[in-house]
Every structure is written in C-alpha cells, then in structure tokens.
Amino acid sequence: DAKTTQPNSMESNEEEPVHLPCNHSTISGTDYIHWYRQLPSQGPEYVIHGLTSNVNNRMASLAIAEDRKSSTLILHRATLRDAAVYYCILRDLNYGGSQGNLIFGKGTKLSVKP
Amino acid sequence: EPEVTQTPSHQVTQMGQEVILRCVPISNHLYFYWYRQILGQKVEFLVSFYNNEISEKSEIFDDQFSVERPDGSNFTLKIRSTKLEDSAMYFCASRVTPSVNTQYFGPGTRLTVL
Image (cartoon, rainbow over all chains, first blue to last red; front, side):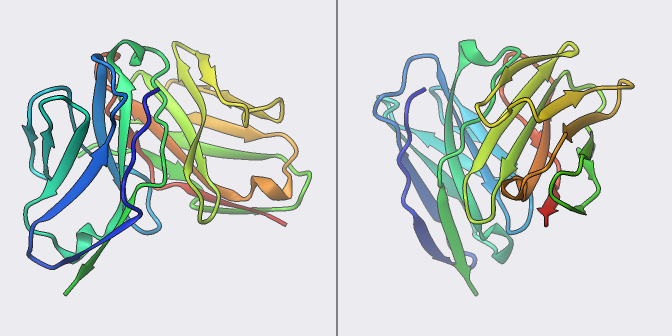
C-alpha cells in the first residue's frame, strides 16, 4: 500500500478554518484517499473519502491535488469538538472487497484553542 | 443514526484467563473487523470477517485469538489465554458494501490484563 505522510501536530483557533495536509507521492491510480479521525477516548470515525475530485460533506471538505500526490482535509470552522487525531489512509479500490482493512499511521493531532 | 455497539466498555481479567469481547455491528453491514490500540500507540488491524469466515488476519491475530458471528447479530472476539501485552482498547468496525471502504467503529472495549 502507498504510504502517507502527515504532520505530527497542528494547532487551530476555534471558529477558524483548518487545513490538514497529507502527502502520498506513491499513490496508485486505484487508491481511494480516506480520512478518519479519533476523538480522545473514542473509536475512529469516518470523515470523508475521495478518488480524484474534490469532495464535500457535512463534516469537512477534501481537496485532492491534480496529480493526486497530496490532499488536504478542510474543516471550515473548527470547534473544540474537532480536537482529535486525523488519519489520512489510502486504500486500493480493488482491495475493498472482503478484506479492506484500514492501515492507520500516527496521524495529525489537531488542537483547537478557544 | 445506526451505530456499532460494544460490550463491555471495560474488562479486567487475570493473565491466562479467557475473555470474550462482544460487538453488535450495524444491521445491514456485511463486513466486520477487529482492531486494537495499545495505549499511546497506533490503531492496529487484527482480523476481517465476511460471509462467516475470516478473510484476512494480521500477524497479531495468532492462535490465541478467534472470532465468531454466532447468531447473525453479534460479532465476538475471543482471547483464549490472555497475556499482559493484550491490554489495549479493542475496536470493532463494520462496513456495508464491497466497493467503498467506509468503516463504522464502535466505542471500544478497554481490556486490562493483570
């Protein structure tokens, strides 16, 4: 599986936008980009995923570079509840069948200041 | 909104004892997973389960571990003879389709082996 690189930590102020970067220079053409987050003392939570085009949902936006070698998770207005570890995970479209286990890295720990 | 549930939330056991961790996945989901997270470390994949059989397992998932879906709703992880190093949070996850790898995680069971 292609590797991802994320900053260890980031800080944000409440109600400001946050851009969480992820580099994946060895991404293959069939790799989906997934983002999950883990709030303190909770299980991981799905945030968003995409393949080539930018994606929006109620939680966040995902901006994918044209060459797909990097992506950015955008939280439009950070709240205190968004303080979590954010994981960028690649998973092959063709490997999503009966297996499809997620491989978590260390992620980015986001702190949100009031 | 449907969610994955896990019981118990905390299990304390003596080394060498058997434990069973229980999960109720989301009802129409077909793919089931166990992950674990040792305190302060990454989330690690243990096993995936589909169509009543194990589809993939990691090196961690040795002969001491087993999984079962006994009644069509519960999904269990059994550790036959617990070791101190089995102390961790154990997360169950489920997923509905083979095509998109969006997994829904439970809140976890904290296993403490004394």
